[in-house]
Every structure is written in C-alpha cells, then in structure tokens.
Length: 613
Image 1 (cartoon, rainbow, N blue to C red):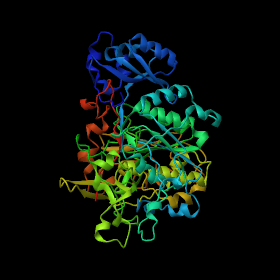
Image 2: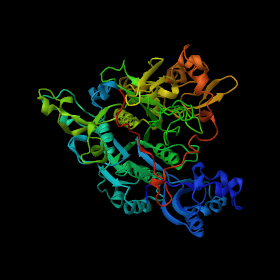
Image 3: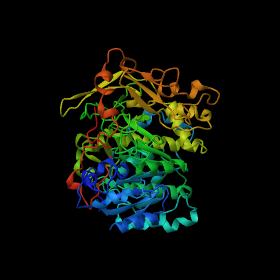
C-alpha cells in the first residue's frame, strides 16, 4: 500500500470533456502518465475548505479517505484516476499531487567541522531534541549516552499511521506534555540500516571506539542530544510523502514535550512542482514556522548529465524549499585538516527545478563516513564490504583479527551523511543559546561557513573510468563549508530579526548572466543589519567573488569559474533543462515494479554505497 511507483493519467485527463485549463493547473506534472483505469493515492490540498468538505468531494467521486494532516491543509485520498479532473475542477481544491516516494540519501568528520570549540565550551546538544525522520533506530549502547530515543513511532505500519493521523489531524500547535500519552511511543527499529547511521553521526558517544588500543574515535557531533525516532522508511529505504508529512506533524505536536528544536531529513525525491504547491515543502515550512530547524539532504545526483546539465538543477525535494537548510557533501580526504577537503562529485547542485532557488545552503562532510551499524539490516546484508574492520580503528591486532568486521560500525557516503552533521551542529548551538530561531541558526551557519575553495576539482569513478569536474560556485557549495568554531564565535552577533530564505536565481539568455534576488524580508537583503551591512550582507554570506557590491549576484562564465573556464556559457547557463519553466523530471516515469495501489514511493535515503576516493 505504501510503495508508490504508479503512473498517473494526465494526457487522458486533458482529453476529457470535463477538463479545462483551470483544472490542469491544479494537477501536479507527474500525473502525466497515469493509468486511467487505476485507483491512485493523491494528496489533495485546499486553501479554505475544511477536510470534511474535501472528504465529501472525494467520496462523492467514489474515492476513499485515508489520512488528514495538520502541517498541510488537506489530506491523503485514494480515488479513481478518471475522477481527478472532476475533483480538480472543484473551486474548493487548490492542488492535487501524487503521494510520492522518498528514499534515504565519522572519524574525520568532527575534526573537519571544528566542533572541538563547542565541546570545550560544554555544548554537546544537551537538553535539545532532534527528530530523525528516517528508517528507524535500534537500541545501542553507543547511541546518546546509551539511552534509547526518548520517543519512537513507526509510520511505515498502516495501522499505526492510521491511528496517529487521526489523533494529529487538526493539531496546529505543539501539545502540552499532559496530552502525550495519547500519542504513545512504540518501537521503530531500523531494518534498512540508514537511520541508525544517521543517528550515530548526530549522537554517537563513541563507546566502542574508546578502548585502550583504539586509534580513532567515532563520536557524534552532538552526543548528548535527546533523539526522537520517527520511522518513515521501510526495509528497502522507501517511504511516502504522506508518511513523512505525518512524521513532521508528530514532531510539531511533540515539540514542547521533548524540546524538539531540530528535524533531520536525510531523504528526498525529485521536484515536480513549485515548492509553493508541493505538500512536502508545505510541511517542512510548517515545522520551521513552529520554531524547528529543518535540515535536508541535497541529493546525490551531482554527476547526472542526462540533459546536459552536468549535475546542476538536481536538488531533491524538500531541499528545494527556501526556508530549510539544504546540505551538500564534502570529502575529508581521510585527514583531520580542512584545507585539503573537496566537494563530492555526486553531491547535487542548484538551482532548484521550477523555482530556481539557490541551493545547497551549506556543505558538510558526507563521504566515507563511519557511523553506527544496524546489525542484520538490508544495507549490512547487501554490502558486507562496507563493514568497518577492527584494524581501521584498533592497533596491536594480528593480521587475522584485524580483518574481522566490527559489530558496531559501518561505512556510508552521501548527502544523507552530511545533513546530520548540520543537524547536530544546530543542536549544539541551540544549547549555547536556546533563544536562537531557525532563521538565526541558518544565517549563523551560512555567514560563518568557510568560503576558501579551489576553482575546481576532479574525481574519477574507478568502476567506469569517467572523470567528473566540479566548479566551486554557489550552486555547488552554497554559502560554504560549515565551521563550528567560527559559528560559536559569532553567536552573539546574529541579527535579531529577518528571515534566512534562500535567494532565487534568474538567467538572462541575451547577456548570458545570472542574477540572484533576495526576499525583502531576508537578512541578506537588509540595508543595515546589526549596524553593519558588511557583516551579514550577501557578500559576506556567499563570498565577494559571487555577489557584487549591490548585493545582487551578477556574473557570467569567467567570474564564477575563473578565466580558463567556459563551463557556464557552453553547457550550464544555457541548458533548457536547468532554466526551463517545467521540471526536468516531468518526462520521467517511475518503475512499474514499485507500483502499489496507484501510488509511488519516495526516493528515500541519499546515500552512496561506495563513496568517492
């Protein structure tokens, strides 16, 4: 019922006599190939009508009510595909989209982000709740001081999802602690092996790497946070929009009870419509506005050149939303120092599809990251070569013992691993100053991020021999490489007001230039921020080589990538796939093997099994 991979009817809808341009504009683009004889799972939104009105509309068209949301004004329904046009024609309906599928996307990690400055100050995330919306967590003495998550819920179980969605429907504000028993916690184990790894990057205490002969310490960035385990990905690393939205609803409802200040989303799927219409984006915005920092993996499609875009325009949803912190992946090059670190060629690049938002916002270590193993999980079984051997972090072992796999640690790569670094960093900073808002955390991390990069770097895929070259522009590294030492030093000077909305980019095909435009409410657009425009203005956030003196980025090929590069003028800036009005994914259809009840699964985890040398 959950693995959504079906194809929706759009051509047939267009040919229907009942369809008009108004109805078509309310249907998401990926409804284009739906089977007209199927029943499909869709999220129906309304700006004004109550869910009772939507329920009546759907049931009147032989549909079924499945679930209501609180962070999104609407619900999940199953309806005959042939009825979609009639439903869209109703003035009470504002938008209809598929219940799409999402998938899941440290020895040197802590050193690379300069977290020691926070730890020395006693800031380890203590008292801060971090909701990990992922594939679950298992009991582990290495996790969070050996204590289990303070709350767990498994949204992949239909009965559990139905129960909690009915309880959460209509709740728009955090619940008082006295109401929590009605949302009773239950086990949400990690059968895929992704959530445990992500949780370890955030909150591992390093217990099994603190022996007398251990040479490496695998410790999370915020080892004392309280973890909230909200499972939305199954044993195959797949889940749906509706499950993720329900988990976000839960995090908002439990915010006060568990001091949930951060949500980590190391998952994603393609962008099919504007973030202003996408229900998944609306859900993360609701969490942000409720006072929760939302951190999202950028995606692992940075090598994609299907449309000649050379990895540009491949940011996943909900990382395309301008509110959230979207994170790309860096390679630590196996060293503790930052100076040799490079971008991972698979890390997705901006601007976003449809809206052309400048993303990612930051980059963080995400390549070949050692973190906690979920024994018996799908990833552990399928990729035994990723088991960390004892000799990797212990000395004095004989050859045979050194080759034995650890029962505690596993190796994964991807923006899924980079996002929890930033989530944990946010938790540490919130312990240091609990009054910081999500916008202030985002602005602080972006403004203080390191902007020292080479012009370009290349990586060769050992399996194919293909070389990928990356250029360090704002669509590749955003505002820069996270630096917690610098963030802590600037924590008292963060502007007291203003949003941290990511800006939008616009391409002028006549001149071949790109401009970046800022929301008037944003910190970067302010004429005077904390008495100094230079400190928090756009130039200081994205770098003076990217943003001109008017605080509107204006550049052509040479100023971004250097005099020797004509990358932009030949392949990127003029690519229709990048700047066209519709999503490059419109023409793609999901695999029929993942079809179930007319719905399609999220991409899930943004991970790379082999990583990048």
